[in-house]
Length: 501
Image (tube, rainbow, N blue to C red; front, side):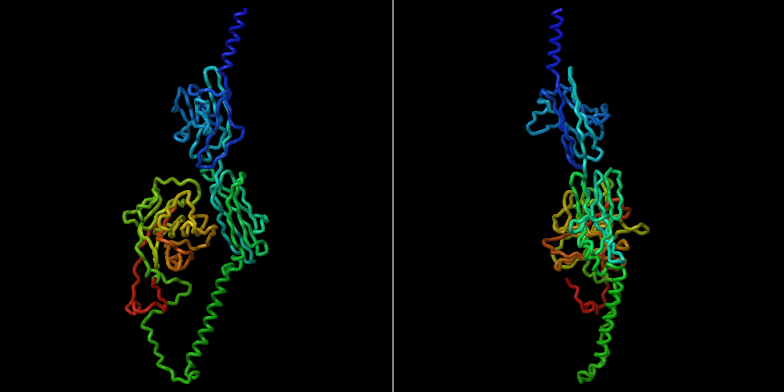
């Protein structure tokens, strides 16, 4: 009887000596989309885990593991979504790894779909244990784009859009005095990538604030903010749709009165000066009178035209370019993730400019096909190439006009400001005036000036093109026709204004 008791005690002591406990942190782990995260897990008391079975799996997916280690190596049995982006790792620099009982998991290129509870299961011949870690994934979206729409009563309806957030963010409107403004409404949409896009709007008046901000934030405290000066909008000539016509009427009336006074003085100049009038047969040199109110003389712009082509050496690999380096579009192998504009999908002109005026035109539509919704056109300092992680602001030597589909048109100012450009350009003209520090954009088909960006260029700059993704039409650089000049027109400047660079 005594021998039986001794045998039981010895067996109990042996089993006790080989038992262990699986330990994981109590707090949940948080990480951003696209980042790498370590899920710590270890056994205590510390012992060599090289001969143990280690299985990492998500909730209720024991047979479909994230990672499975057995017989001293990683096994092929694995959830396909984690293949080539999961491995065993050290929980800290002081860890001894598997020999010290550290069985932590490393996950790379996190997605929203990775958010879940992860189980760390460790088993040996006589003991086993498991621990559970909650992984929370977040994504900070794009900077809010503010779009003002002036109303008739000196108020402004301001909309705010942002995309690429996870989990669902909060939208807050505030005045320059940090007073919370009440939103008028909004909407939220979840895309195929599980990330959220938000749209909110509010109505403000001159008495409410001078600056209005829209901030989009997560519960973690991470946020993006956009601001807009509403006083400049309310007081500008374009605040009321009828104001431009009023201004045009007043301007024409003023010039008409001045012209009438000048004509009277001219006709009676001999009475005023006592001199006999000279021959009044005006020698105009046959120059055509080109008075088209509100229109742009595209022929004048084309006098500064350059032959622009794509630089193949500095081309994003996700783009395809024609043999003549004039047509560029998104390639079939480029996989666009998220809803943000693909700023990294850039192509640069092979030409570099350090002075003078330079003009080029870009086709944004094919016949019987709607104009492109997504594109980015402008200039960039030579050597400043686009990437996902790089800011494309004027302070980073990028200047462009962007069409971002439903998010509208905007320039890359330090604070995003949307521009109401209608109709959508089918052919865009770009004039770079290097010496005067101006970059101007024109709707060629409508013969309209769209906007001018003012800056100070340094070093050489190159044309910048981005065709966006998803459009049927590509982005095509055109060869501008040379303007036809009569012998007289070539001998004297048009309307007395020199356009030499």
